Length: 162
Image (cartoon, rainbow, N blue to C red; front, top):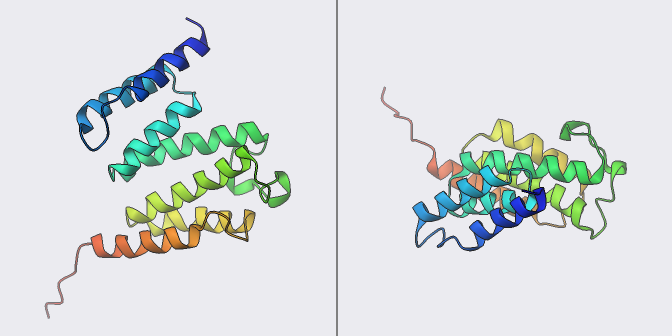
């Protein structure tokens, strides 16, 4: 079967999924099947990321965001390692799809790690985002502040026993 047909089949699996909130198990099966069918398809990865994100399964959303970041880097013909990317490597200030997708993948990675209370891993993604997009077009500062607050609320409390 042609790659395009596999991607179309995978996308149809996601489109026909019952719904993340109304039937998470059914949607999980559709996401898993779509990823198995077309793991290199951007729409499939975006669908998988959204499913895991909206069901608060942030640890499972991270690999999807990493794949999306990698795909966006390929489209932009920039370094695969996000730490090596500089503002002048792509039109990050422009309203173009691939640069915007790259920036949003950085936000996704920062947010998910911070929701998992892994600020040490999330912060460098945020630092890179602000380096590439100092105007903060996607309001990442607000999202990450919310994630940090939520992460702090979700963290287990320590006993103050003396």
